[in-house]
Amino acid sequence: MQSNAVTQTENLTAAIQRIDANHHWHPFTDTAALNSKGARVIVRGEGVYVWDSEGNRIIDGMAGLWCVNMGYGRKELIDAAKQQLDELPYYNHFFQTTTTPAAVLAQEIASVTPGDLNHIFFANSGSEAVDTLIRMIRHYWAVEGKPEKNVLIGRKNAYHGSTIGGTSLGGMGAMHKQGGPYLPNIEHIDQPYWYGEAGDLDEEAFGLKAARALEEKILEVGPEKVAAFIGEPIQGAGGVIVPPASYWPEIQRICRKYDILLAADEVICGFGRTGSWFGSQTFGIEPDLMSMAKGLSSGYMPISAVAVGDRVANCLIEKGGEFFHGFTYSGHPVAAAVAVANIRLMKQEKVVDYVADDIGPYFQQQLRAVLADQPLTGHIEGAGLVAGIALVKDREAKQFFADEGTVGTLCRDHCFENGLIMRAVGDRMVLSPPLVISRKEVDELCAKVRKCFDLTLDSVRTQGL
Ligand code: PMP
Image (cartoon, helix red, strand yellow):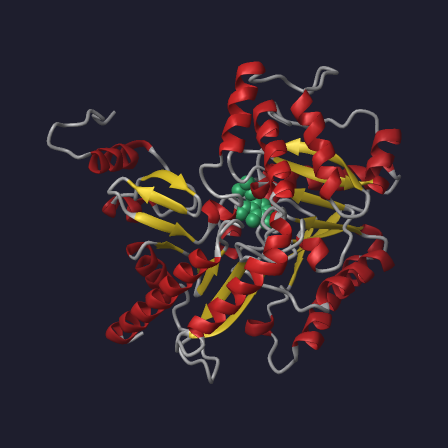
């Protein structure tokens, strides 16, 4: 084992970086590359800002990892955790027992979900919620006497988590190259990426074409074998791909036509991100099941859930017997208490209306205004407080950079150096700030985006990219 003692000459940042490099294996990280420079140590958060161990204030354009929707340092959420820890830090929900926070949270979630999504199954992470979806959907069809109806259809460049189930259902090529083989009976269709993949089609026509790829796949597999279609209302980790308005209603129509369940992965879009409680509402669909996580507790505690509509829930509850599925921490009382406080705070502060009517439109407009004449900016898409920006070599000719990801990474590094957290997905820059961001903070965020794009352009020119 390496020595972890902090030496007298070493400052705190260097000490933490050294210990981190010795023992802490980071998720989704090239560890050798990280350890060669050392991780940035984040020590504190308040509102839409975080501070590093060197005292730098950084505006968090990503709300952590798309999750700190109510901002950092919310006393209401902290107090809810403290109080629950004092009262009952843990109990399970397996032994014919319940706890008040879990029961109340299920009711709170059902009060904001669309349609009849009234039955709530808890897990800890988005990935576990997605795995729950997979098992529940296949089990449903088996209980309905159709065990052969077990093929799930997802999309290329979709992200549904890192477990075997989530990775299988997701359409991330780089992930599929590692750790397989993955689950059988999963198919992927093309994503509805209008700017990058539509050719000459307008948005409306492309949305319909992309949705009809689902019908083609269903007919290829055989409708009697297809259990469900699963998609993120807006693909988040895939680079914030906002489908044309024509896409989701057509997907829903096709699912209904062939009696295929529609599942929405709301892990990013849920809890106000797009200006509705759920992305499904923004796009006018009523899914049969939804997975959610992140914004459910504003990231203060790990908790996720699957909301299930009456059709699936009633069948499984009335005819399914015991569902052999669940986690030690399903509905963990402390996480649930924080999530209850979070949803109540969102209602009290009318945050979803704020995103829909005020700050969301303002953010979308300011971002477009500051980048209007920025040569790297190919296209901006977004809804509410989430946006994706395609970086291009030539915006008129819509020419992408040859080595995808190089310029995005350059840009991300300039952001970090300049007090802005913005994520790069290949050559798409993505933003998803806390929902409580003010207009003044949006102005600051957008000014920093412009500055960092200009610095990136300088680097692109210097390096001849
Ligand atoms: N689904 C979607 C749509 C996500 O964006 C994510 C995480 N970014 C997940 C599932 C997985 O969530 P987790 O990282 O909590 O397992």
